[in-house]
Image 1 (cartoon, rainbow, N blue to C red):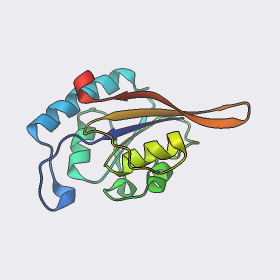
Image 2 (tube, rainbow, N blue to C red):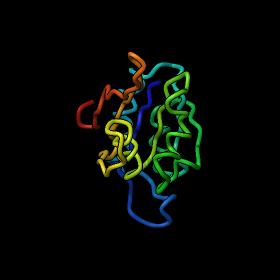
Image 3 (cartoon, rainbow, N blue to C red):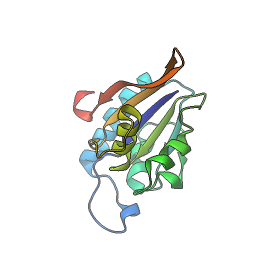
Image 4 (cartoon, rainbow, N blue to C red):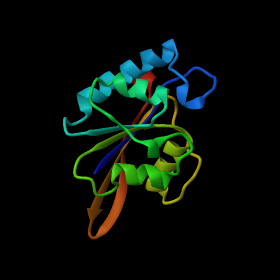
Length: 150
């Protein structure tokens, strides 16, 4: 299974937190990364977004159907993200648009076996894949990229 973690783009400060919108720079970065993702994601990829406005705006830049999942809201646990994505057993790739620190914790857990405060930069993408070889499961980092490199 491929699990693609995409942190929302830069958002304006303010309250309520779920209502924060992307800045002009954030919109630009989301569109740039969405273009790259669209070229690389299989057509069967399920796209899941946090209910936060900034995450949904980031998802809309991809111009694909997406589902808003309350279990991807700011402050959820890595276990919630993995359950929502169906990791590691989903049949199709899953793109999750979410938040820090949770996405960094998910990446740390899958790659190192422990939750740790790894940083995922705004609008950054971490593309992970699981595989089983010789009866041993492992997670592989396929791509880690930010808006400045696409």
